[in-house]
Image (tube, rainbow, N blue to C red; front, side, top):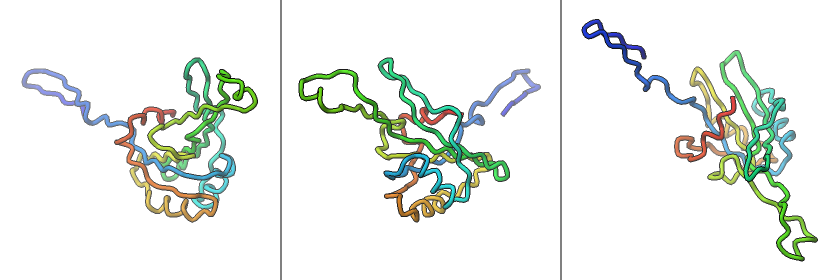
Amino acid sequence: MYRFSLRNMQHRLDMDDFSEDTFELIAVHCTEEDFRLAYLLNNYLKIKLVRAKTDLDFYKNQKQINFPLFEYEDSKNYISYNLLSNVQKILSEGVTSASDFYKNVYETHYVIPEIKCDYLLKIASDSGKIKVKEIVSKINEIRQVISAYNVAVEKLKSKNNLIFD
């Protein structure tokens, strides 16, 4: 909020009015492939998730880690949906012993390490009209979904990893 005082001609910008992007986050446990889950969510939630042109990329120890991203903009209701894989397994480079030579050793990386789920559904709205309980209930109706639940975003240490718009 911009405040102007004629008395002492000071300008003040109140930063409290510029809150962070607000969004809801739903954790989904599901063993299906990402494109299959996107298809199922499209059917149950009546949305149109499509694969984004670019994945969500992170760099760790000079390795690029790609997390598949699906998106849908509901321009009528001012809601955006983003489905992304929370977990990515990549082949380790170092073979530490002779027995490791014959088996593949994978490193597991998470977008949000505090949540050990397979997928994250980020829902953002300019109007604030997100019916999270209803959405979670519909996702839990999907036979292939093990469980889905709302996550308290404000308690996450790595919530900045979800800023990719």
